[in-house]
Length: 94
Image 1 (cartoon, rainbow, N blue to C red):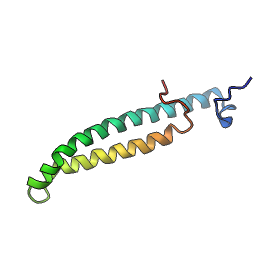
Image 2 (image 1 turned 60 degrees about the horizontal axis):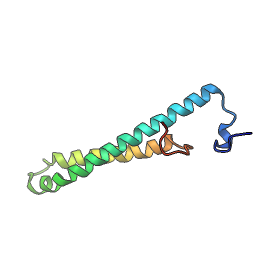
Image 3 (image 1 turned 45 degrees about the vertical axis):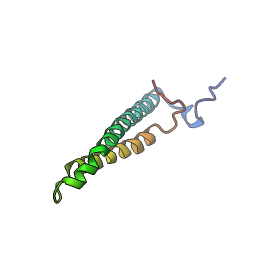
Image 4 (image 1 turned 120 degrees about the vertical axis):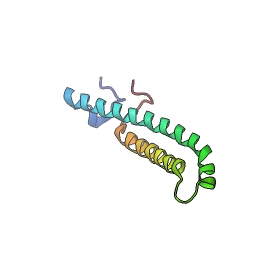
């Protein structure tokens, strides 16, 4: 009897294709972890961003720039990780 939890297009894969699919999904899980970690750092940096924007002169707002970079990194890791995890029907891959 066929495993009905596996999508139809994945039932005919060769062992090498299955290994490639597993590597892609593990990479997606790793990117999700990196996304959560950078999101936490970005939220913590938000506490200092207001002071940086208020008290730093001119264009010298390095905490604000760092916060923008970590937020963009987090968003990018979430999007790419979700695309890599496509087809995964469990929350944790391992």
